[in-house]
Image 1: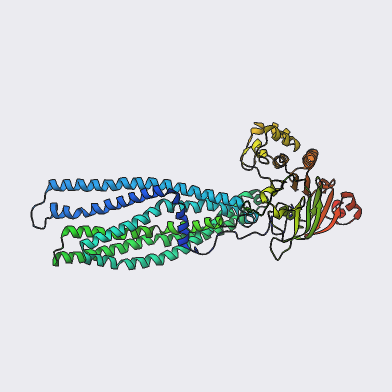
Image 2: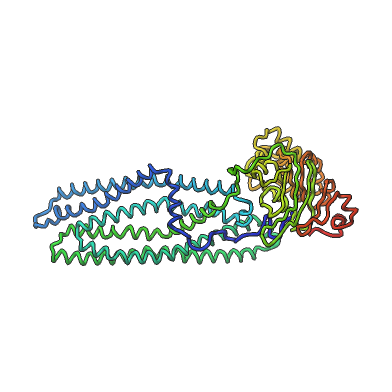
Length: 606
């Protein structure tokens, strides 16, 4: 397969593919994440109503301890308590708490549904946007890292939305309500409690900044690990045939150790928050108890009031503790959300809404490349001043060494990449002046790398034209000489393919790809090493089928086997991105140049 030196479609990008560094704007990322909940406003209002009801029942139930203690257990006037009254008051307090339990159940159930719907929308947006991204994006990002956006990153976002959104709101309501009740009970004890808050917040802020950086680093390394695993699993045959098992194990071990180290540091930074907050909560509790005891002795502060206040002092610091303990989830979710939104924010390839672009119609197939110059990188030119004209129905072949620019030409014809200078036109229309969807609907491709989707053979062939009938699918299979082997399969055309057609031979998979192109009505055909995976006998067997496939279509052929291009109307020999020879098979042999040397075996294609 001919391609540029950097790999198919251009240079490879960073292995991890992540945004790098700490979140640029954590607040903006959180706001955008929460925007996906806006479609469920009514249910969110109900959830927050249940949160308020749960908080009110918790605070109200705690406050009921004051009259219970002062009236039925230790009356201030020294009179005996009342068991009957105590039981009645406890039953009422239990009822209040049960209301809180029911509210918690309802809010949790509803919030889980909201979160799952929001995650479904995010996954849809991410997947839909991936379909609109240019080929360049896929050429510069590993598939494993892109997959991690759908799995690890969205899972962390899901956990955050399902739990932390409600906890943050509940924390604010609890702190506000508790503060009001504490002031009503004892302003002095409230002052003691509030003075500890800045200390707690400083600890949270210090550890939080550290955690954020560590969790972003963890997510990036996780993307690297996923990308490497995907790459090695896909290329396992190559690894084994070259005996590189030990080598890839060492590389993976390095990535795995880096992930372990990053996770240990991130998890420690997030996990240490809880014990620190609990310790500071105990200190606050001890201070309040000491001052409260002094007030009971000197200012006759009632025992019931002190008991309730001590309970509130714990409730006042508990939301801060809970939020601090959730820092692991919050920062991990923000890091994941930023990676997901970074993909969604990538500039799409689609130009459907551009009113200045037109549509191709009744294409005959006259293709002209006029002084085309292109490079995947600005400072590295791949094609230099390429000129050619393909008349309707002609077969144009490209030959040359690897990296000469053969596949690059097909990438430009389909506008997977846009040229830097010159023009490419179809029937006199510059392809940059038409919608890409319209352009590509008139081009069929058969690539060296086969790809079959999970589904039946019938469905895979029909992928070339979704409205094709079963009879047309069978006719296309016959054209590609695939019909006979399909009939020998247990379920014929209804045989289900999985794992990219792993139950078929490489040649059979390629025949299905050829059939997929045959069913297309596209007047322009690109065959990029289409028979490279087919043995010589099979190649001869399908030669007539390929001729039928190319009949009345303008065809561009890239092939290392020069025997497959002998009948081309024009053969173009490329070297270092330049045309060095062109002509028919006989003309080039008579010329005795580069093509002659390649065809006679005096010079091999590298």
